[in-house]
Amino acid sequence: MNDRTFDRPVFVRKGEFMVEEIECLADAFEFLQEWPNNRRGPIFDTAFRACQRAYDGQVPISVAREAFAGFARSAKILEDVSAAMPWMTAQKTGRGGVTA
Image (cartoon, rainbow, N blue to C red; front, side, top):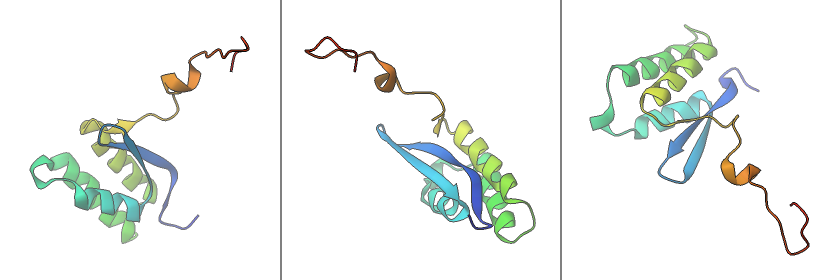
């Protein structure tokens, strides 16, 4: 793990069925730069500045991660991957009658 990698990734929804893993400052910068201009605001600006300051060594990388996660939460794209998806836990039975 390098000094610009988050201690744990942030998962964000991209589109209806895609989840992207943001695991370092480079990933966060790329995601933020692709964010539509018309959807940017003060929380976006705060996250972007926090990433810049972490990149420059002015704040810990954890500050950038939390700012990015806060941005994702406010944009309603933050994914909680600690909770199992319904299709992962649904009970299935096959022809043999054995729970899969």
